[in-house]
Every structure is written in structure tokens, then in C-alpha cells.
Image 1 (tube, rainbow, N blue to C red):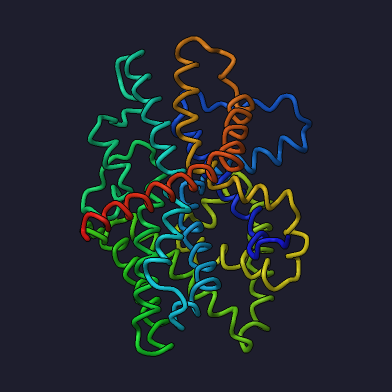
Image 2 (cartoon, one colour; image 1 turned 90 degrees about the horizontal axis):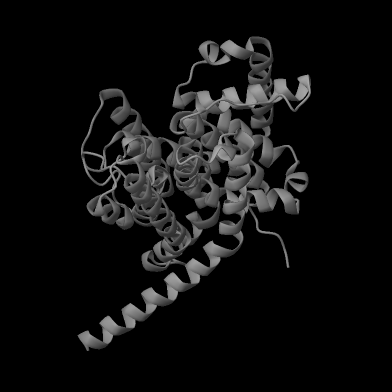
Length: 374
């Protein structure tokens, strides 16, 4: 059985999710102290850089998630949609069956943890409200982006899925109904500009929120990047660009270390338009894909989505144990271990099972509804 086409990005996904995880751990857990006495000085230095990078830019990583999604969607569906090889229903169903089952599981896991935390300690974990209304809105997957005022979600990271679904719909409409090939790319660029405008002017309207801005800029930048890398005239020139940007980033990281982000800035556009495209170009054009497509990196990529959706629910349950006297859960390594095991199980077993059951239930409901209509 052959490898999946985009297995080469497994390690990229995992690193991005790891940075998000570090950022959220630092923000959400009550004791974000990191103990590293058990490692030697060199490894401790490397770990301190990784932790600092995660704390500084982990919260900005979703724009890179969007960009990779846009890039992959261009490669996978652009020409299929153009040639009417897939209809809207089939296109969206594949997206829903991939994203929603594990999202629903993560919401239930977070809700149960929140309710137990409230029952034991009399307040909500980190102050995030988790009544029945917020849980139901979270389960719909439209709590972020669809409304002008963002509604608190039971599991914070699911906002990414809400906005990603909007981007998927817009992508299909643009590619399917734009009159010419040139118009398709112009419309994608327009949505990048719309995202920048939302962010710049603080617009807060349905489908025009700050979260949507990240999605539009990242996703449609990924689509344009896919087009650029398909152009033979440009292809020969982008290798030097990628090497140059990554070399500069590593130089600044090594020289400035603690003040690196004061030097280069934390703006999401720096990530969306410079660093992340350079990583994609580096992977695509410098012939290292065979090294990146090994089974272990592919497995890391496979569990990355589970890690992203389940890490906050795991933090909730760890906080319950710790606040109730479970001192053995106070360390970084213990929480890392629990999170990794749960997400590995989720990625390998829970997610496929939930997807299959979700598919069966929805198809059964559709059969029942069609019979009633008849």
C-alpha cells in the first residue's frame, strides 16, 4: 500500500501543534514552570528555545494551519472542482466526516471535565462558561465566525474548525463559479485583502470577525502558494528565497535568542507571507520529501489533529486531579506524557471509529427523511 501524498507534511503539522500546545499550557495551566534539571546543558538550551518559541508564537500558529490547508486543498481539489469532477455535496461531506466526529468527542470530553471541575471547586475552569447553551452551540461548530460576537466554546481550539469550514465553502464557490482561471486567483487574493482589512480596522460582523480574518489570510495565501509552485517560470527562483528566509530566521534565533521576537516581531503576516511559505517551498522543491515521508513522521502528522483538539480537555482533567491533591500531575513531563498517549489513542483508534459511526448515523437519517418526504 502506497504512502499518502501529503505525508511529507506530518512533521510540519506536529511541530505547529506542539508550539500551540506549549503556548496554551503556559496560559491555561496554573503552574507553567518547566523543570529541566534532568537534561544536560546543551539539550536544556535547545528546549528553552523551543519553549520560548511556543510561548511567543504558538498562539499565532493557526494561520499556518490555514495556510497548509489552503495549499493542500489547491493540490487536491482545485482541478477537480474546475472540471466538475466533484459536486458540492460530496466535497463538503468529505470535509465534515474528517473534522466533526473528533471535534464532537473533544467537546463532550471538555464539557464533562468542566462540569466536574465546577462541582468540585465551585467555579468554571479558567472562567470559561460551560452551561448547556454553550455546549450546544459548540456542538454545531458555528460558534466562531458565523456570529458578530464570538460565543465562548467549551473547547477553545475548535474555533479553527468553524472558520475552516467557512473557508472550504468559499473556496468551492470561487473555484467553481469564477468565469476564468485568472478570476479565480484574483478572487482568492481579494479574500486575503479582506482578511487584512478586517484585522486592520477591527471589523466585527458575521463572517467578518478577527478569527475569520486569520482564516481568509492564511487559507487563500496557501491556495496562491500552490499556484505559484505550479508555475515553471517561478519554480526555479523560489528555492533561493526559501533558503534565504530560513537561514535568516535561524541566524536571528541563534544570535538574539531571548530577544528574538522583539527583533523580528510577532505579526501573523510575517508568518503567513514569509516564514511558512519558505518552509513549504523548502519541503516541496529541495528534494527532502523522501526523508520526511518516513513512517514515524507520518504517524506524528496523523495524531496532530487529535493533539490539537484534545489537549485542552486533557488540561482540564489534569487540573481537576492536581487541584484535588494529585501532586504527581504538577510536572511538565507527566502532563506531556498523558497528553501524548491520549492523542495517540485518539488518532489511531477513536477518530476512525467515530468517523465511521458518524457517517452511518447521518446516512441513516437521510434515508429516513427521504422516505418521509416520499
